[in-house]
Length: 552
Image (cartoon, rainbow, N blue to C red; front, side, top):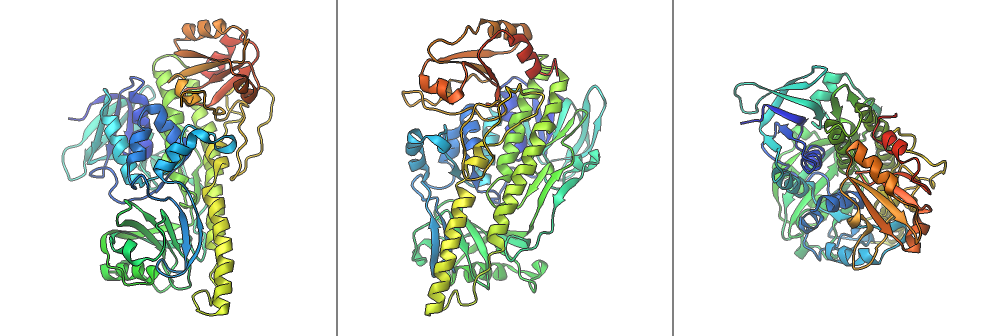
């Protein structure tokens, strides 16, 4: 039986909807998710979990479960470029295995100082874990096999009509708010009259136009390919350009190839699909096709609005990426992180409903930023065409391979070593940020300068005994008291109590922490964003009221 009434209704059981349920369920907010699919994803879909997303999974308590999923712990997560997978290796960008990342993270500083490093794992495994975690929470109801057929904003509540995907009577569910996380063809976005803005139909030699995805099992791949294993394998030749992610490290792969002008996806048979894979391999490697289908690369799209009344959109319903850089699913997760604490605070009377205006104001510019970065990576890879002689066993072929290898290895570093994109997203100008007049460092993809300038991710440091600073943050609000002699925090504690907020006060007497934050006090929002910093708690009441929308 579906719950007839919940605090929040969610249409869409992918990463955005499931993450929202995990965030809200831990805050005692009831959630009902419906999704017309029979369950979480079967196909691999996205394959990269960025470090910031892993930090959020750590905050919720299941980063280790995610890191155990997918590839074996010692499987290399390199990005490797080949003429064909079993022929010439052109270049390789080396990255650590899951086990190596766990060991290395505590010794990193500067741009990669983080509680967690990225993890290469198929979205199918992430969704399954998010579902398991959500279903543990009281008040969370996850329901696959239910299709939404109508939604209504009734001013003081929302309603959706749902029916079983395989047929059956319609039911009406009621909630205070509704999130449409129902994908690129979002019925909720269309109901609201929102439109994608940006660019689509971008044509490239690769990663533009129609692509063909094949989920396959080929356990002989690692025996027949004379190169070290890699997480991401890219073929670079004039006949069959493709990228292929290792799914389980034992023989399952997510293979994606550019369709040529003469290839009609409606006429592609299973044997044709297998031949595409073998052409990219350059060897007759046996393969079982598990699923296949077409999709379109060349999207750089963001909805013109993310909210109307009591209805919100997030994930692919709000922004659509070409998958270079692995930014789409990670952006969707952060949509949920941003919205969840605000919905919970409003529902509990701890924040004004005006706080919800900040969701679109904060997340839409980030979506525009991230889709733009993804487009740049796709241009870099897709507009770089292979030379005619790149596969020749000749001096000209060797020269072409050397030149391509240098370019592609450089591209790999630019696309996959992205601390600036990962950690540098900001909410400058938001009404839910109290600025201090300082300007953040420039926003660049491949470099990140930690800063406590309000509106961004809190600078990270390890505080001893293997503990991350993020591990001592409160689940809701955190006030950092920095340096040997910080001012009293009593005013913030009193103001938080008056507003009904949970505030954890953390003393960090280390001078290194004070130098990193460049302030005596720093207030961290529930989504681990610096909301304010300063040298006095005198204005604590006004600061918290501003951050919770009461004095917007």
